[in-house]
Length: 442
Ligand code: G6P
Ligand code: MN
Image (cartoon, rainbow, N blue to C red; front, side):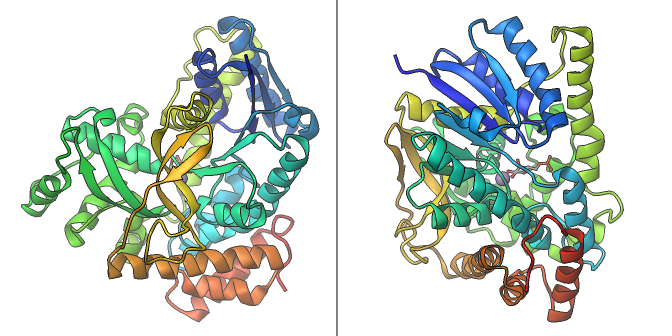
C-alpha cells in the first residue's frame, strides 16, 4: 500500500499543532507514514516540533514526527506539502496593518495595501519553495494556504503551470458552515454555488438536498428587517469577537446588494470608510494574534515540553486544519468531494478573463480538480472583480520584476486607495518597513 509523507512548511506557526493533530487523528484514511515539520526559523520550529513529536508519540503510535530547518531533508520523499508561510511573522503583519491605517485607509493582512505588502514578502519565498519542490519531490501535491492567496496563487500558477499545486482558503467553507448553522441544516446536505477571487467573492445559491434554493428565503428575511445574526461557532468558542463583527457587516452588505451573499471580506470594499473609522489604529488584529492566539499556543507548547508530556494540553483542532486535511483526503481516496479552490479560470466564468485565477467550486479526486462551470456573471460583480484582478496581476508583476511603476499602478487600482498621493505615500512607507523582505523596487 502506498503510504504518504506529509510536510508542513512554515511549521513554526501557531496553526501547526492543530494541523498535526488532525493528520494523526485521520492517519488510517490518509495512509500516513510520516510528518515532517519544516521552517526557516529554528527556535519556532523546535517549539512546535518538539511538542508535536511528543504529541504523536503519546497518541498515534507508528507515525514519526520530525522537525528541521533543512528543506531538502524535509521534502525528500514527500507526498503532500502543506504550505502556510508568513515571512516576517505577525510582527511584519502589524506594520502592514498600521501603515495604511495611519493614512486612514484599510490596514489588513490580505485586503488593501496590507495585502500588497504581504504579497511582496511572500511571493519570492513561495516561488522558491514550489521551485525546490519540483526538484526534490516533483510528484508531491502542494496545498498552499499561505496568504495573500489571491496573489500567491497568480504567482504560483503563472510561474509553475505544471506543478501539482492547489491554492486554498478556509474562509468560504467557514462561512458556508456558519450559514448552514443559522439555517439549521447540516452543512453536508447543502450545495453552495459561489464565484469570485480569493477574499473577494459571493455565494449565489444555497441548494438543499431536494434541490431547493434557500438563498431567496434568507434574502427575504434580511430585507424584511429581521436581525439575522450569523455566529461562527469556532470563533465563539475562542471568544474571538472579530468574526462576529465581520458577519454583521456581511449581512449589511447582503442587504445593500441583495443579489448574492457576499464573502465577509467584501465589507472592506462596500463599507471601507465606515469600517476604517471604527478600527483601532494603535491595536490591530496582528496585536491580538500575537498577544492571544500565539501566546496561548506557544505557552502551551512550552509548558508541555517542560513537563515532558502533552497530556492535558488545551490545544484543539479547527476548521483550518480540518479543511486542508479534507482536501488531501479527497486526493488520496479519490472521494470527488466539492471544495472551493483558487484555480485558473479557463472559461469557468464565461465572461471573465480566462487567463486569471478565480475562486470557484471544484470536485477533487486523485486526478486533481474538476472546476464547476459558473457561467456568466452580472456586470456589477464582473466589474468589481476586473479592477481587483488588475490590481492583483500588477502586484505580482511588481514582485516578479521589481518595477516601482508597476507597484504604483497596482496600488492605485486597489479600491481602498482614494488618490495617487495617498497611495504613493503608503507605498513608500511600506518599502521602508519591508527592507530585507521585498525585492528592491526600482
Ligand atoms: C481566515 C482567512 C485566512 C486568514 C485568517 C486570519 O481564516 O481565510 O486567509 O489568514 O482568517 O485570521 P487571524 O485570526 O489571523 O486574523
Ligand atoms: Mn483566506
